[in-house]
Image (cartoon, rainbow, N blue to C red; front, side):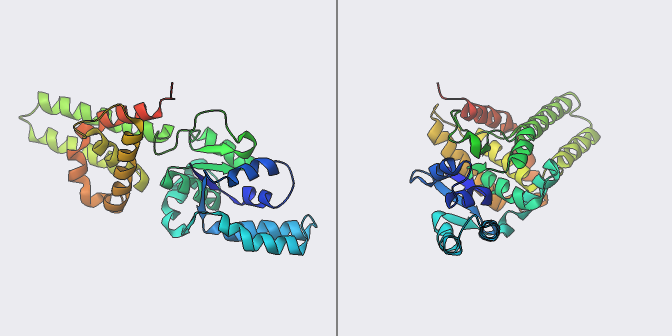
Length: 272
């Protein structure tokens, strides 16, 4: 399991305070811990505050500073996450630096665990319940469905609306195939809808279309998830960085979107 942790969790690895034991459970070998690189500064600052408030000795603080970065499998450059984090900060009305962690969880298909309860409440209210877990609720008894498996509510709504618009467009063109103005206006509406998506939204759109285009698949969640992860990574790299250059291609793939959304829904279902 991939888990994104922020500074509010890191500092509890070294200080015996509320939820210290829960934070320590995130240090098991079956969890791959990742974070944006800014965790080094944020956790370092938190440790400094603990030292200043005499909750840690200088020797304990220096040991923590030396050790904590080694507990991560990887630290990601913040520049790779800034655009998605900015979109999230606007959506949640929350500071951008915290949203870097949420953006990373979306990027790697992991779960964000934080002891920042104010931020967690905003994430849950914003439709990211499958992507975040408050430290007080860890380990969760609920099945965790990562963002890779199930899009958040806002993303599902956006893609469902786009799929509905595409179906309306097809119906209209079937009725008025002889009217070139109808075709032009219909394509313009689709282009406007796609252009309104952020980069991550475009990546999920084309990845969902690719997922729907698979000719043969079995009800095998691991295999389907693997396909989704691969498609999403390719879409982020090859399409989402310059979606305006790929509008015609994206529109040509929209007839696969409904099936792709159905397969994502299959991934999101709880086992059993």
